[in-house]
Length: 418
Length: 144
Image (cartoon, rainbow over the protein chains, first blue to last red):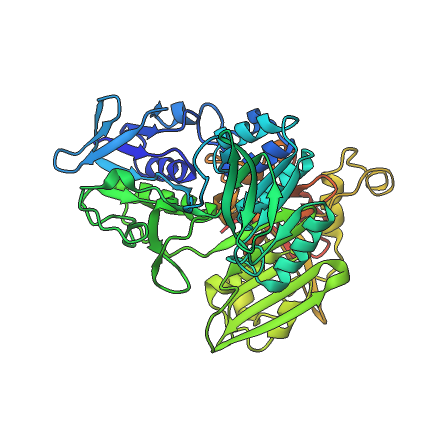
């Protein structure tokens, strides 16, 4: 039996650790296009900002692959999966047979059809190579535009601003951080970014990237405004990177559809991470939720199942924790409910950059937004996961630090293992 | 593995466990020096109090630790031999993901150094400092 994993992000790490929980022996091969051992991908923002060094990026110690009997085929591109003969075909003509295969190819940046997008000076920000390319611009250019005011775009903007570039962020929605956060949280962060010198433009989009002799000279916005710039970062979001499964018959929707064992519709092939459409805890539906914790956990469950354990993935919970210029922000679960039947409690302390939003359904906590005060946030995450009836003490959830004293004694004893 | 368990019925809310924790994790391991001269870090447990009820909450060193699953830098690791979950300080980037994920709320932000700190079960001691310090045997260090 031979395990093959395509992709070397955190889902692959989870898978190796999952496989080895059950099967200490059989060989594992990881094939990945990026020529690096797994690195903390979100840390590319810290790297570009100058807070850490490249040597700090490694996600596991150097001995990890050897200790876990993993063969690495890095810098190698998979072109096709041949289901019938159970093998993976590489661009260079090599063939790698598999007993069990995990597709953990992650996401790739979504590039909208903006006029002028093709050519030099247009970048994305999801890989170490991306960070290196942007780092090389520092000192050479003055102005840069970031398209997209989500987590990746704003982290790129913060890093580049700290490196003394003039940064403009353009966001299509009426606020930044529109997916995971809400208007109030977006405003607090937006104001903080503006204070730090970043221009944030919302409810607008880039109609054209203007070029002169092929080089980027500026952008034109939908409303006719323009900005001069020498480079553009496109950070609108990521989409599942599933090209290699074309022709395999594996069921896909937005991502690769997997069941509660992380199995695809084709025998012996699993998928995990940003490429997978797996169970979502709160909706009970299958969704692509490209976040780090889901990728690791799905990889781990896939690995255990590949090795023969029959363990059920309980579903992912969307969550993000990120800090902008010293303001910690978190979003957990459902933060922007789009229909009735939800109860929302909020607390805003604008002068302290504090905002707290609690989302309930039938007295069950289903989501939270925390800005500025995030201590013990995990207690809220626990209440969401355990579907605790918080009806008797829901107002307490707005206090700065969540407490176990409000839980019924029996539940508290069970929770804390007392 | 052995973990620290709290008996809320006999906890008197004195918080000596917190003080012992801070001292044990100080550079000097001396109470006066730790509190007077050193940069004081938060205790690694959480004492809760509400009316007559008080109890201490400690890291459970989970079998499937959510703090490890969410860590973006690889700083949070579970030692496969000892079962202890620890934070490799040099690797921690202070993203607070583990603070968001820990259902016990026992991972604390040390904003002065921009890193989290958590219970390490006092690797230099047989009995964790908090358990030694408890005057009413409200903390137990045992296998369950």
